[in-house]
Length: 341
Length: 247
Image (cartoon, rainbow over all chains, first blue to last red):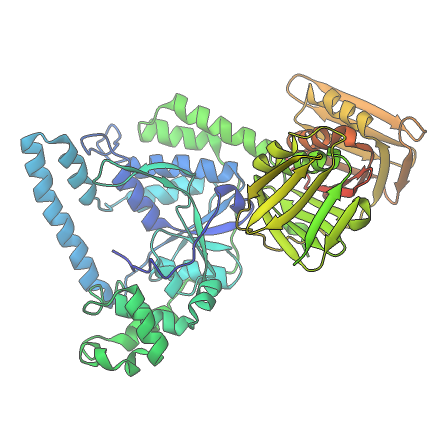
């Protein structure tokens, strides 16, 4: 579910090109999960290879990264490690949603209801064994670095922006704001029309960037207070949040009283959660210690071999996409940024 | 707050707007007592335009503060294009609208956009090489190179500049000496070689084109190029372009 900070945020619309020559820490699980959910046929079946293994994530990563590299963007993928134990309720909740969706999916199959089949198949999306290794293997062939976080990936992504190794963290979730990322990019992909899941309507999707310090200044709060607001609304570590408190009310309470312990009307609920531990997860997160991020050359021939021979992709389509990448990297100019002293 | 700026003809605005339109769709101008200025980069941050239009270049200029106004370049251009070469243009601001008077009896009002201007810095580069040539000649060289290549390489030593390009179909080399009808100025601290994308160079040179008689190119090996266009009655346009990535 993730943190619902909508309404409190000052987002600025931007374009993918604006991230040219910048290192962006991409939330790997979030990205792969989206590919698995979206890259499906009309009846909800995933792409798969000749052994029946799912390849939706590889297809998504292939095209997305060609796009990034063509524009000179430098993505570094951050993979989640072990979740803090406080996350177990949220994980159980997600499992239950998938279980329910599986039942509904099977019913839709029996009724041959194509629309429902796709809808519920999407909700059953889960990461399976091997997918993370597949993804890491493909990223390696692209010369794109990845980082294994010890705990929450978004914490390590945020840390990379703090140490200056990355310009921004990219994720659809807002959690990295609580982890203190300098900037968060959402919709980190090309602008275009996207279908809203489960509805027959389309919306215009374009990249947007949130500058955390600017957001805190606009709201007139500290980063510690932002974490407290997050806890009131509900984080992955207390997914239900507080009874009938949304973003606006949470902001008002914290601005008025300073911190959770001082808000009189929530004290009864507050004692039931481990709020100090949650604060600690966000404010003193367990992160990977990274001193350098290195990009390698793209191994064109091995990408074609791996995806066509082992994962049943069309060789022709791989080659035409990769030749587009090759051309654009040949033609590219530097960014002026490095001469701004 | 008082602001109005009047030019005796429309060429200056046409040159400026078409120059800016090669890089961005929306622009924020800044007006102060000293004049009007603009600075902006293309979305990939490969090229930058820095325009300085001093008050002395206007027929009439008045500004008693520091004003920023944002416009959509294509809309502004469309309106300015409704003027003849010799018609005076006067702009002023009122209620979030830009008033544009053309000639004696035409006035447009154009909605301003929220200016999203962040301060764009300028690249700091010591330039080793400086050459000066006619804009028309430079435009011709770009055309000559473009038939075989996507980029232009400039190599300059104390006596000559070599403009070259290389593509799948072949190569081109154009050599200019220091003499009046070729390079009117060469000044070289160190022999320099730089390669720049025609994708950016061509449109800007075409855009400013005849409004500018001559240009000054300054660059250093593997560093950005700066072109100064001198536009009569206007001041100057600086165009910065990052070098191409060597593969």
